[in-house]
Image 1: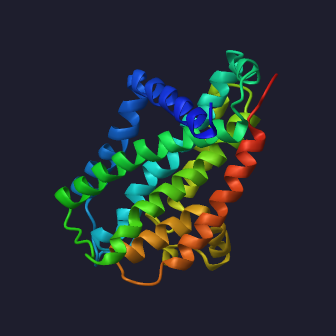
Image 2: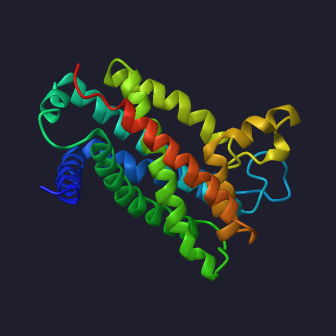
Image 3: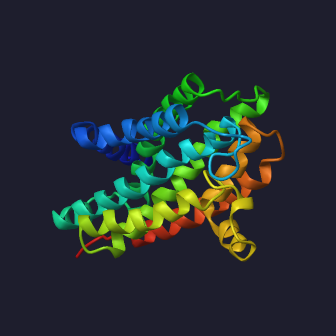
Length: 251
């Protein structure tokens, strides 16, 4: 079997496995929807009120997208590695031609497809229930690229967490510990003006910051975004390489 065939076969199996887990499907698609309904439709933004949610509604579109772009790859890939390890499946995979990099790439492709669909749902809902007005320009074509690259990056990070954690519960705890600070401290829901100046270098060090900046420059505040995409892409390659190296072969 060719490399493409091996990746396609593993991706098909991973997609079927995801669809059989109804809880995973629910939280992938409907947890972000709940957040949009709470913060977008109920709390709403107060552009002249100061404090949290003081920016126009369109400012927070990257934040809503970041929920699914960040949480889903971290937990899904990490948990998949933990399940494979607990079930001795990596020992079986070690007897096949499928490499660790191919395994991670297959699961990354599945996550890109799933999260791409969820992101489209979230974007449509945000536009429906808030007064956000996205900028319509040719740059919108780059928005799916940002989503795909960010998903790949966090799939690599999820693989690292899955390899380091000793159980599925450990993976969930580790992914939440990493994801929650990143979600709110990466220019998503909290603007840099609300943070102390000494903390801003940490914001710049977050991979999610470049996703938020780039998507915001495309959909809300037109500006340069190629630099953010370049940084995000370089980080994605690095994390995927580290994640592939960390994927267990045998226990």
